Length: 215
Image: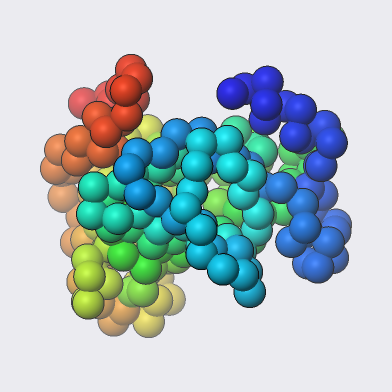
């Protein structure tokens, strides 16, 4: 799998200076693992079943069913694991392997993801939810989003992150072993000790060794 990613990267590097139209045609990563039914919908395209080693592109929508899970390996070594009944979009992925620069913006409408940031600078990663924006700083986090309300929970497993309700200006820092809940775009985060992360975030839905969780 690692060799496949390297081969794709050598052939189709995604550079931060590319026009958006060109960046859309360049691979952003691959599907490393998939469990039961998961789906990919390209920008302006038709939804198809997601399979292992499928190539991913900027603005792809990835969705899992009620028993599904998927692991996405991005070109900068970011790893995104999706839990059941999750819907995300890879809004932006620009990466220059030579300089290590770029940015990755993803949005999650519902469900849960585990996000382990890759080789780009720590301020290159953003996760958008219906009610909040999450920024990462060399981080391993889970983000879950409730259906209907969009209420968002951030748990920091490694490093540090920040979360900002979309209707407020101030961001709240969240450190390792802590979690923050945002119930609406106008409500400040509630920070407290982290709850246990769900089994899908530990890799339990895949036939392989689980992720390491520091607590």
